[in-house]
Image 1 (cartoon, each protein chain N blue to C red):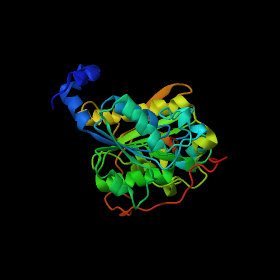
Image 2 (image 1 turned 45 degrees about the horizontal axis):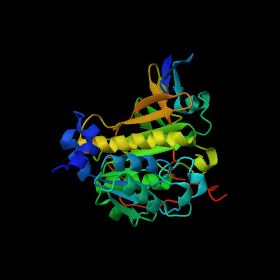
Image 3 (image 1 turned 30 degrees about the vertical axis):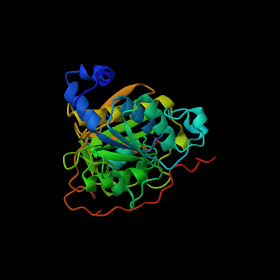
Image 4 (image 1 turned 120 degrees about the vertical axis):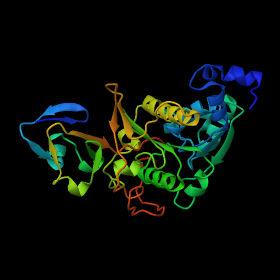
Length: 70
Length: 269
């Protein structure tokens, strides 16, 4: 299947993958560092393993960014 | 409002813009903007908003200028080391544009003071460095129905989005809850290329000005993310989350709270 991860097209040789697995495959160091959006919708942490990403889905891993002041 | 000759001259490059014009400049001159955190993001934002002629600029920061700030916090100069950031910034703003009224709050934002601080302002810029403050600013702006600009930077990356009360996704719609302590490095731990702070802070200032003149499209319901190392920009669509704990259909957060999470544990090193 073809999906988009962080705006980039990716081809995976399966029909579906859980958000949890995708985090792993995408080498997100610590899942706590990101917020996951599936087709623009927020995915709760507790739903990572039972939410599946399918053909032409768009997933974004949005990193928490503080910075700024000090 | 009658513009003086000097004002027409000073703001001529704004006034000549069809989207701004005399009316837009008037709106900017009547606007009250609050900058929380006068550091990497707040410095460039304050400089541009002052130059633009914002009527009132509020500055909130409890810290004093340190030598390690000077690499990116461009409103503070070397002789300002040791001076409260809000004072250092006020002095520069008054030199750039004596017409701007500056209010200073030499304090951090907490659940107990934030509502009172933001209440008189039209637009808030979040230039803070830590997540408890970012979530607090978000929640306070949701409760007080204030628009604000979220900004975050780390290493070579930046992100920003604009919140409009009731209309667009809030910071919690996208980021949910505070990340666990230690999960996300701070700038003092991971580093930051100074110019990145400038890039992001000026985007925040531009959003405030667009909000005041009511032209164009704000960064609402989208998060702008850039990676300046490869100079890639993209916007990610985000949505108002019906299950959002603060702005959703059944909010579970109904009052402001101070959450613990030190931002920069290497700060004083």
